[in-house]
Image 1 (cartoon, helix red, strand yellow):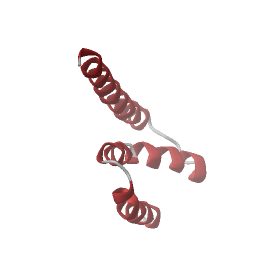
Image 2: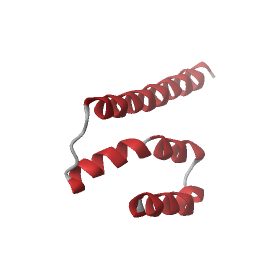
Image 3: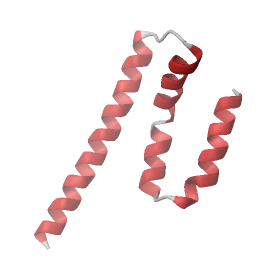
Length: 79
């Protein structure tokens, strides 16, 4: 619990120093970071559904960011 509190306080503190898109990506990936660092630092055993959930989150973030980049590229080429 203290780790989550510290992470949220840090994210809130530095959120204003980045773009809204980057802040959203960071907040979206917070569960993935939690699982990863729990496994890395605390040697937690991950269940298959936790790994699958993290992969779904990663895929969603990658998909939306790639789609947005392609739309932006297409828009600038069209202009």
